[in-house]
Amino acid sequence: MKTILGPGLKTRLIGIDGWFSTNILGNRDGEVLDDAGAFKTKEVSKLSVLDSILEPDKYPELYKDMYHKVRINYYPPKGDDKESWDNIDIFGWLGYKMQIKVNFLCKDSILAAPVVLDLAIFMDLANRAGMKGIQEWLSFYFKSPQTKEGLEPIHDIFLQKVKFENTLRYLMGETLITHLGLDYYEE
Image 1: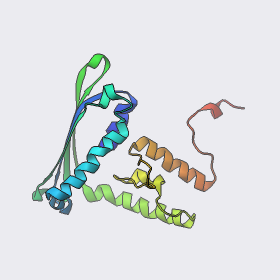
Image 2: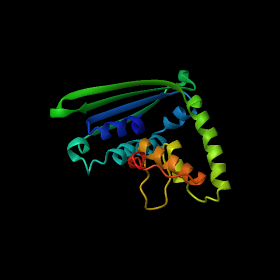
Image 3: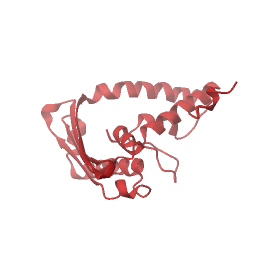
């Protein structure tokens, strides 16, 4: 939810006072994350995503003082079902306060299966194209994108999608998408 909603809120310069999210998991992920040490690693990665997307140093009046809390709860009867709740306290023009509430119920394996299939196909394509090492263009498919040491990962799903599509266009010998729109009017 953070990588989808966060970029949308930032794009519209909607401020965020707080973001509380909790996941209820019954599968092995939930059991593992019930351990405080394992949860801490997950918490750090989940908390860092919004900083990367929102750029609070660049937009301090909108995101610098945002309160962000993440919880993961193991509940065995859920099995492979997952439930996540997000409460986002936002503010708009003239500081007007609003809230977004998301209750997402899904099956982890149903969400993951097509992603894994796509990754297998695109990793094969990268291999056949002679691409080596970290494939940043596939960040679109990962919660924790990998990058070359010293580079910040891109968590904004909109930017990830542009990078992904442009890499495919590059591999096909097509013109890269710039979104300038100027080419529409050239003769």
